[in-house]
Length: 164
Figure 1: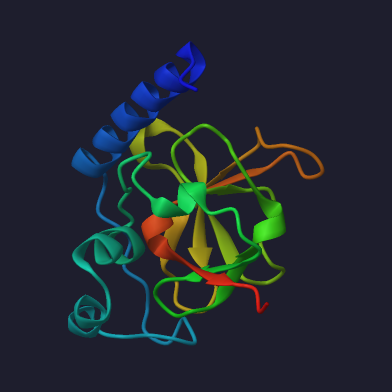
Figure 2 (figure 1 turned 120 degrees about the vertical axis):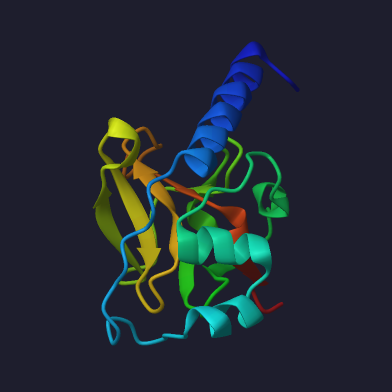
């Protein structure tokens, strides 16, 4: 059911995504040898779709409400689309109304949180621990028990259903 809150949140999220993708500062280059899984830009471009490359390697943002993972309700694991590292258990997924898959807790040791000072504000960016792929951001407006909202780009994730 579409409510004013959902509609307004979607409009704001869409505006934020537009601004993020149009006026973002260039990502900071990292030194080689930083991550367990590394590839050249040419190799990443062969391994990923253009949208995955934009999000994971260029710190882009997908349009809100476009990911099929928003509606994923099965038991399983959400893994990095770049290197297949398990990142989030389905038991920690919740509906945030923001238009991106949201979780209240990552799998221990799976992500790196770094300060992101782009757009004149301070946020906390979330990256894959294994390949350094940009996943999204974490905010302090999530549900209990952590109070956190890991707002992830669905294109940066892939879902692996639990074994039956």
